[in-house]
Image (tube, helix red, strand yellow):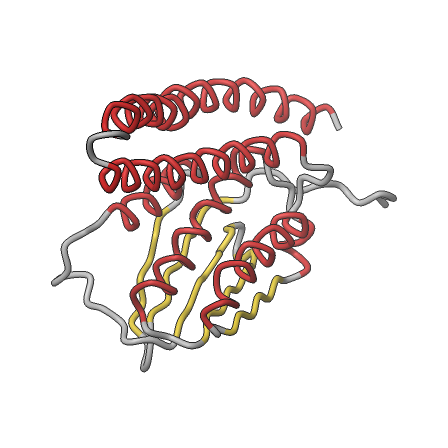
Length: 221
């Protein structure tokens, strides 16, 4: 238990630093843009109502994204269970809200080993944001009607794989976008990496990262 407590203390310090960066970079930038948009919309309201409407739409979008980012931070910190089972519940809720309106089916499977794996708040958040980006990319660009996610622990590594049955892509011939950079940054935050696999049909993107700590059982032998 002492080892787990020490690990949690280290993770708390690391999380504070990460949250400070996120709040400054992501949330701070979003709030600044909302402030600028609001000033411009107010000036244009009488002379150019159409442009004001477009700016207000941007404010709405930016506000939604900021609220979503804050919700993810709060969830990661205050979640009741720091394990894979809690994470997969969050994943399922997100996928249902995003994919169901488009008629895209979703299936998530998680091994017992993954469900029992202890995940730090930072690890949960990075895995969740990787998953969100991968599912969002599949919904927007793949043309698929099915998205699947498999979460497992293999040889001391967490493996989260998101697959679709869409048109696929060649990573060597496309221009890397923000989505791909976001997924790779989340993997780097876990000291892991991203792998892409072309299927027939579709694509699989995997985040692979080391498992640092696993929770003890309630009744250790």
